[in-house]
Structure formats: C-alpha cells, structure tokens
Length: 357
Image (cartoon, rainbow, N blue to C red; front, top):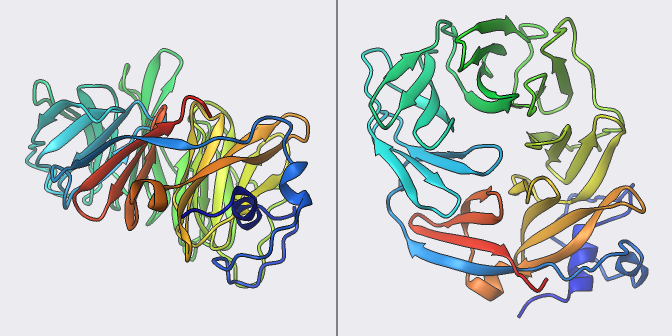
C-alpha cells in the first residue's frame, strides 16, 4: 500500500530553508497548506510499466547513457561486448573493441547508433565504430585515467570531451574536423575532484571536491566561478551533479538535498534526498525525476517548473515498490520519454509517464 500523496510531498519537499536533522528517511507529519498552494497545474503525474525482463546481457558490465537519452551503452572493461541500444532497449549494434594500446576501458558515451567514444585507464581516448570495427585514437593522450567521456552535439557536429578527475585535465575534440584542444582545470595540487560534468554547448565544466563546486569556462579558463545561493549545512557534502541536455541548468545533489542551478539566477532547492539517490532530467529537460527509498517504500517523484513562482514544484509520484515490485535499484537512467531501471543483477524495467496523468 502506497503513501498518500500529501504525506509523500511533505517528505520530498520542504520550505526554501528546511530544517535538516540528518534523518532524511523519517517522515514528518503533513502540513495541510504545503501542497495545495505550490502549483497551479495538475499534480497527478505517475508512471506505468512498459516492460520487465530478465536481462543478463549487461551483468558485470559498465553502462552509460547519452545525455539526451536517445541511446545508452554497456561494455566490459576489457573492451569486449560493447552494446549500443536505443531508448526502447533494442540492440542497435554489438561488437568487441580491439586495440593494441587500449586495455582497460573505464568510460564511454554514445556518438550515434554505430559509434561510441571511449576512455581508458592508460589515458587513451578515441572512437569505436561497431559497424566496421574501426578504432580511431585521439591525438591527445591524458597522463591520468580518463574517468569521464562526454559527447555533445554543438551546431551540426558532435564533440568528444574526455576528462580525468585525477588531475582535472580535459581534452575537447571535434569529431567532424579532428581538431583538438587540451588544458588543465586544476586549482592546486591539493584539489581532489570527486565528480564533474560538461554543459550541452561544451562551454562550461562543473566539478566539485565535496565541499565546494567550481564552474570553469572553457573559453576563458583563467579561474573558476562559484554557484550563487548554494550553502551547505554542517556535515552536508556535495555528492554529484548533472547538466541538462538542452539548457544551461545544473542539478546538484548533496548528502541531504537536491538543488537546481539556473545560471541566470541562484541555486534553488528541489527536494530533500537520501545520500546517493538517483535523479535525472526527464522529457527534454522539462521535468526532474528523483528516486527516494525509505521505510515505507521506493518511489519516483517528479518535479516541474511552476511558471507562476519560477520554482520547481512536485507534480506527482509513483510508489514503484508497491506498484511494480521494484526495489534494490542498481542503475537508473532517464531516457527521452522512459525510465530505465536495473533491479538486482538481472532484472530490467522500463517505465513511462501514464498517458492520463
């Protein structure tokens, strides 16, 4: 049996300056005024299940999705069994990446239905065409492991961005011309990057060390900017971050809360979360979906931008444990119009917004 929507909203959304005692899984009594005045549009958003399959094709493999959710991929670190899939889970291409210098593929992103970009533990990066087996290495090799590979469409072409958290080195390659730019975004030898992301235009890199979030301009990388309005509570740490795929918006997850940063404004609270919660932009960046696991269930809450208040407000939720038997989520990807969830080691679910929501 699921929670009432008013209780759920009360657990997911607090005031703009919430009191946080560190017990984020404890539900407080509902406040009658909290949800009735937040949004002027319908709040009946919910999910329905499209597919549940026992899928061992990705067991023991790394996975990643392209930022816009059109494709996702899986691979073994050895480079074997690289698979490109569309948002419906259909396999578009499958092949083994073989190169005399690429041994440990630790990062990957999808360029198109045939090609992936990859990065290795040895600092190599490049593209792999699954259709013809061609491996093309980038002209720039990083000195440290390539922890992140991002592909972004800028204008009519795609760019491959490779990054190493170990020394904050970055390389940007145009996949149409082969031109390459490399630089270091490291503040000091003491800085330890925890995670990073690049915006959709490949103009800004966001990175953090758990305490401070820095925004680096790739056009003028002299010194980074901070995030206006982002203040951490005592004992709170930044955990991860994620750029939108079409807009200059940045989601910032801490050990307690989820913020959204509009570069034209200030960081704003979306909701309270547990540490390491799954979250993502959804449906062409018009929504934010957040996984929250607590004593009473596992649910996906959805938030949309209220144009009246210019804040992100709750649209609804689905208790996926009660409705679909989903628990123990290992991976969570928001594709274009579907949510892809891996439960345990072998079970894969696809969910989408209910049409009558």
